[in-house]
Amino acid sequence: MNKQMSQKSTTPEAAGRMQHQRARALSPLDEMDRLFDSFFPRGWMQPLRRDWPEWGELSAPFDGRAPKVDVVERDNSVVVRAELPGMDKDNLDISLTEDSVTITATTKQESEEEKGDYHRREISQGSFSRMLALPAAVQSDQAKASFKNGVLELTLPKAAPAKRHSIKVE
Amino acid sequence: MSTLEDLRGGMTRFWDSLAEGWRHLVSRASGALTRFKPSKSADAAVLPEAVQGNQWGLLAADLFDDGEKIVVRLEAPGMEQDDFDVHIHDDALIVRGEKHYQREHSEGGYRIAECAYGSFERAIALPDNVDGSQAKAKYRRGVLRIEIPKTSGKRYAVKIAAN
Image 1 (cartoon, rainbow over the protein chains, first blue to last red):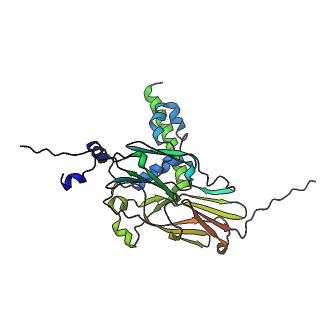
Image 2 (image 1 turned 30 degrees about the vertical axis):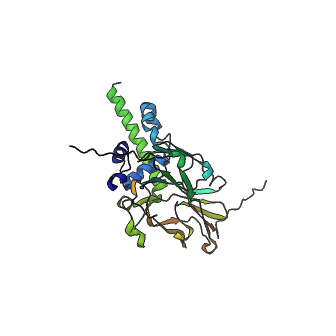
Image 3 (image 1 turned 90 degrees about the horizontal axis):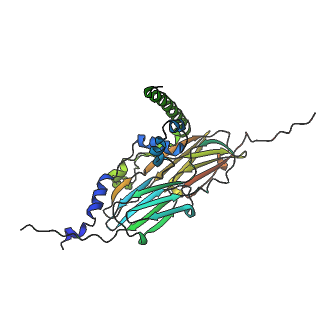
């Protein structure tokens, strides 16, 4: 096997997936979208929902808040970083399959005991869940997780790369 | 009633609802949208293209008054305590910071890049006269919490005497 071949570690399916979830930058508009999602979890489009019940189904995936993530593919692993400020690690639930990860958080403990007159309230509370498709198959039982300064970092070793053979045309 | 009129009514309500939502959003959250500028330090040069594009981040803040002090909580994950620079200037709290990008050592390819890195600044108006010299700040689990004692505007309960 030559060197070039051994470096190709992704399966053809994984390569296909990568194509349509290439890293993209967020514009301020995306940011506003995200704000919308986080500030109007349920109910604000209620009139619409009453008239067109299908709307509920259509907008269901956008309910709740979604944490921001970075997903980096390294040679032998996939690293997922999620920003979860104010979250306690005991309230986080991470479930993995071979090609996806779901991060679920129940409640924020941080502000429970805070009492006073609020002049400004931008921090959203409550639970959320986010599922991410991974760019390569991983060994879910070998995953490592750390949580520091509000950032969850998952290191997921890639599954043994599918062997590639090149066939010479004679 | 015709389907068309139904649809028109629905659209009107849709726009009303949307406009209402937008006003609510702007009044409540526009301050949280913060620009992240590429920092001048060495790590700026190695920012991958995917991350460079993320110049907008959310720094959501809560501000409340518990009678004795003003408490500000600011969500800023992925920082270290020393990355913050907090000032109180008259009636504004100014939080500057720099969020460092963790350099990828191997040929790391970004598949999703949503987090913003770099330096940022957010100013938050303070509602009452505060004693900035007595302010305390603490950074824990990605949330910066600043407590500033009030010098005036403290709350006292007033009893109403019976006739």
